[in-house]
Image (cartoon, rainbow, N blue to C red):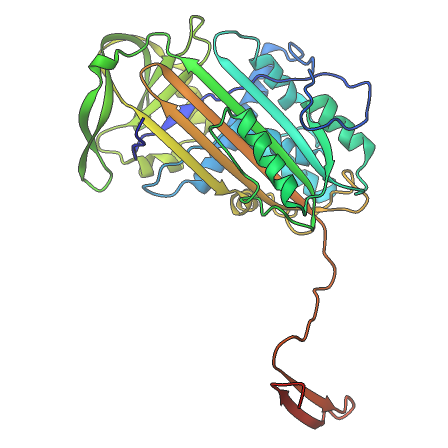
Length: 412
């Protein structure tokens, strides 16, 4: 399928198959091992809705921070929320308070996110998978209860490695490639790996595959006009259905239509189409979780005479560090309190997310990987005089320079 630079807005429920449950053996597991966390059903309907709303609220905040006018943007709120919840579990003091506020957590080790994932995956209607992993620097002093939490609650594997080695970067990329069905092949370079100052790499990978409840006939796909924001008209492959039985609703400045997946129709894609006089970039600043929830709640069955949806395939990646700091997660980067994670108190250097989505006649395939790197100070930088230099000989008391010179060739 050719990639099309399609300018659409799609809110995709990229959900997960959670592995999970209590861990009786606290010893770290290798990154290739699989575990199962039995958290399904631990949330009531109301609690699950509240946990989902927290992830969504953070997701809309994050999307507004990273979206650029006129540019395609595809984020995964749940992938970023899970990754950062694992980081928050190792935070204390003001750092924990900031992360809790941004992520809408009740405490730094709020287990609702993990329980929500398990709750969401009680379905055979779509393919949903998740994997979490921690890659810890050899010999670095992590707190046992932090590793136990990451393994027991989030189902994370833990591998002790040399994060300054190219071999480890290759292993991390192989892990990402395998757990996203090859849709996202690498993230190590984006995270600055290999890095001898890195002490912990945290990863979350999400894979989603859903088939439309009613698929599109490929024979009805044809090039159709698509209006760009600058007024230009282009033609893109567009899927069509006539007399489509769908759910629609109207929001402030947009219309929503829901395209369900599978027989149960539990999961679906909500497409938000701005009104003709409203530009997408004008709509996005006001699009928050409350606006979205109201539109979803008011969805009702309607026969649409013609449904036309561009077929598209998008890949996106961005460092999230600046966006997360702008949202209020400031102290985590460059000197916060992570003593509950390790007595050596590392700090969060970077967070990166990479996403992929393809929407065609059969349905939707999507993947996301979010990675974070914890580092510690490398100590004073080296001072190697290996090139021409200048020097002075001076009196500290009076500040008088006795000699001043430049050396281009130490051989004299």
